[in-house]
Amino acid sequence: MINGKIMSIEVKGRLKLMSGENFYEQVQKKPLFFMIYSIIAILFFTGITFTFVIPGLQGFKWYFLFVALLIYFLVANIFAGLFKERLSLVFIISFIFSSLGMGWRLWLEWGEFSLVEHMNPVVLIGYPCIIAFVILLMFYFSSKFKIKNGNYR
Image (cartoon, rainbow, N blue to C red; front, side, top):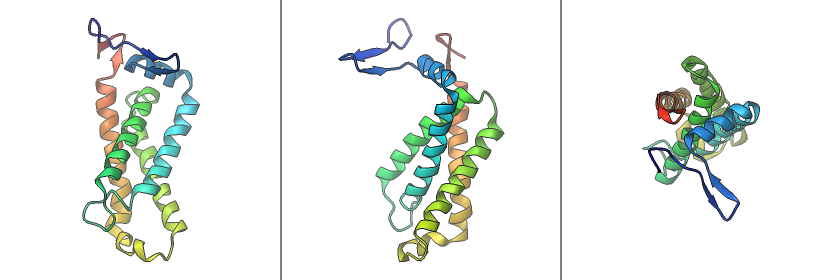
């Protein structure tokens, strides 16, 4: 950090770490790509991780919880670059695709004994809602503290 600004770092000419300002510029330059990426991330990570991230149920692992939260944080930052102050749209998109991801996983593994504990109606309804609220909360804070013209808004 130099003079209060985050600088881009280039390592061996290949890896370039972006500051928040450059990230949101990239999101606005390629909105379709980032929208597709975020939808696929919500869809697949909700489907893959829902049996591993619910505390108290069989298969819970802290590792998967932290990985899922990291992916949802990235998705929320993409949404902050795409949708400015559209909380309801972010919630609806997150809810629909987390529900589809969870339904996809249940459809693929229908009849598996390991999913019996996860077939509780509270889990089936609550998990997509919680994921949508987590993404919405991260979106709210990301958009609130988003770097704009080198200064915090």
